[in-house]
Image (cartoon, rainbow, N blue to C red; front, side, top):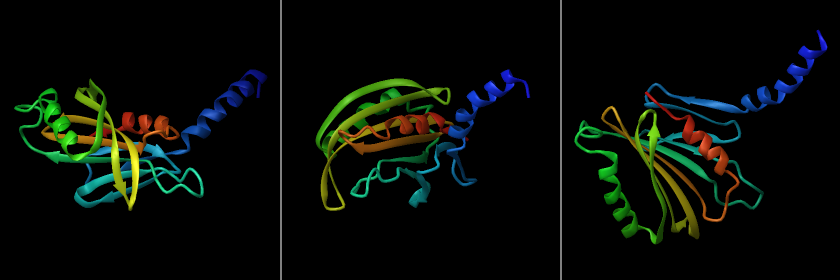
Length: 175
C-alpha cells in the first residue's frame, strides 16, 4: 500500500472507532429512530416512552443522566395548535409543579424540518428519597399530528454527559 494511503487510513481509524461506539435505536412500534452511545442503556417503558440512560460516572454515582422521549397523538397538533402557542402553558405548568423552578432559556428552532421549542430550566426534585438540584433541557415539536417531547435530565452542576445528550437529541428522526 502506498505510504499516502496508509497515512489516510491511519487518520481515519479514530473516526471509524468512534462511530462504532454508537448504537441505533429503532422499534417498529415507536415513531422515531435515534443514535446513542454504546455504553448508555435504552429501554422502552409505559406508554411507549423511550429512555436512554447514561452509565455511572463513578462507583458512588447515584444519579444517572437520561433522555426520555414521549410521543402523543392529536390531529390538532401542528394544525390548530402551534408550538409557540403551547409553550406558555407548559412553562406555567412547570412553575407550579417544580420547587425552585427557574427558566434559563426558551428558544425556537427546526427539528426534523418542523417548528420546535427548547426549554432549559432548573429546579429541585425528590428522586429516590434524595433531594437533587437538576437541570432539564426539553425539546417539543409537533409533527404529523404528534407531539414529540424529548427531555434530558442531569444534575444542575454536572456537564459530563451534555455533549452526548445533544448528539442524541440531534439524531432523533421522526417516522
